[in-house]
Image (cartoon, rainbow, N blue to C red; front, side, top):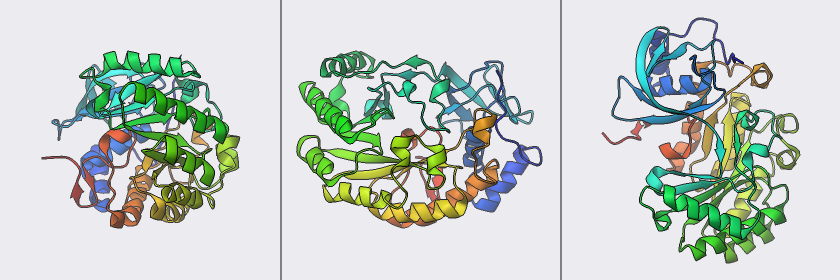
Length: 363
């Protein structure tokens, strides 16, 4: 099955991207990588989603890990062998193409961060925009501490230096905890298992179900250091786009949840899918959350993997210009906080080589 992602009114070319990059004061490399996330890649692979490393011809010393569809036959980007082209012009090379399977755990940031999927992320099918149903289900539900311990033991063998004590953060990434109590209990068990393995890393949790003062105080006593990564995702049409356990948290309540977490001494952040809200809705919602955020949020380019998902877009969000404007809006809001994106934290970001006038990559 092939997928048509997004179409622009005129063919997207390298010269057109250069013009847009100049207009929005971003490096052409950043604009190219955002466009690859938006439009996907046409290839013979035929995969809905694939992980790969991309090196752009203009900046080949920096590889970027991306997760995009490789069956986007309407995309202006194409892959033949390892050569990535835009409208027939080579722009880079692709390495290590692999299926984006939902697995029990994996490492980031050269082994300093780990992501766990202990509650069968691939079985969570509630949010209309989520591509999890397109992934292979290789992540069994881990309900017991023994199973968590077995997962960590297996991950030790995969660690670059076979040493989990190097971990600075362990992030729990799952959408299947439907109740606050279940989520808190899982975090209590995870901390116990990490302690057994001698891992004192901060625990990060992507969730919208933990929201009460009592829960945050319990986490402060038994789980800290801890960072709440609130799964905001969007500010409008939440009843249409989100599963019930997420939709019940309103946009108006989100700042209060982040504030409660901060008051309990926790780190705070949020995840947000750019392209589901209008720019006005984005600006208003992000402005309300940033004062209660201690870590740079995870802003993701929306990827529509089929016609139904494409129909969920906000007006105009099928164009590269929309995302370059969104990037500028967020920079204006988040810039004064001093928080900056980290390349390894997001595979579909709006920032690569620069944030505003600041370089994010060592020369």
